[in-house]
Image (cartoon, rainbow, N blue to C red; front, side):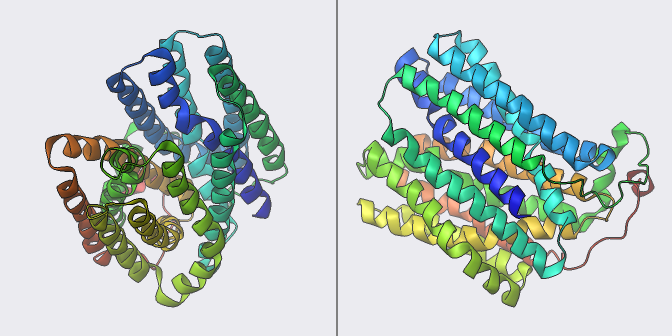
Amino acid sequence: MFILAVARLVVTLGFSAVLPYLGVTLHKERDVSLETVGAIWTAAGLAGAAMQWVAGEVTDRIGRRPVLISAMLLRTVNLAGLGYELMHRGPVLVIAILCILNNVLRGFFDPVASAMVADLSRGEHRIAAFSLQRIGVNIGWALGTIAPALLPGGEVAYGQLFYGAAIFTLIATGAASLITETRIHASSLRPPFRLRDFVAYRHDHRFMGFLVATFFFFLLQAQLYAPLSLYAADHVHMGISAIRHLYLENGLIVIFLQLPAFYYIRRAGSQRVLVLGALAYAISYAFCGLATRETHLIACVALLTLAEIISSPAQQSAATTMAPSDRIGAYAGLFGLTQAAGQSFGPLVGTSLQGALPARLTWPLLALFGVVAAVLYGKTNHAEPAPAKSAGAAT
């Protein structure tokens, strides 16, 4: 479990040092339009979302370890390729394809890692295990956010960062290779994959309700990125360095408070925590519309980060707890798909509303997504796991 957390830390460090700034680089250095950058990011997000579902099915059939290691090795090569294309001013189309491929490979990492955590933990220990993973991810995020500020600017320096990210990913692959296969039913044969496996889950009404709530939750959660930064720049008059403070604050709060949050989740129960977390997100984003200075947004980000540290482990634990024991990877993949879909459409919804409505009115409207998520989470009982059964039996 600890080795997996370290691997995620190192992967996230490399990822967060480069990819959040790729859109800015394409726009400023290569004169790529904002619409094209947005299209690349949407395509990458949707491709990664779809692959999470596929990865979940694959890992339940052939095991966690081969899927995880293969995806990480290919992602190492992909990051190096991105660095090469940026340093040599390669075609934007090639860079876009590599960016989409990066998200596809990430889609083969996240649900598999979540399935491994679920394999190795049970009950309240599962929430603690996911909390540990969150700490690893956010230490990597904080370190990666700081890293570009410590290096000289320029496109060549930025392209070289991708080589560094590739090296970090390779190191993480070495750490992950130390983990033995965790799939509980490794000796049992799953039936051959059929297209109808993809619709078998519709009969699990409890899980479907959970996924709908999760989609609305992440539509709102994703406002933290492009919509909030644009709002901060245009209406609160914050510069790039000040905006970076918001994301650094987000990472540091998770690092220091994620473990204490675990004890609260254990005492309150994951269902109550999910309702409270969604409402806290709604309140935080609604107050963004009242912000007139940097300190106001810092307070809003602090509150939504507190909501994040209780919601995220509870969501991951609930998704895997509801899964039959022989379909944990598939359920983790469906959760990842829903999360990625919400995060892909969220920025588009947020920026579109900001363009069509007064910016300060946008935030209370976006907050309604959190209210809807809270209501749906409150109606979903996910305390007990489902019995093991094949996908074909569900149909």
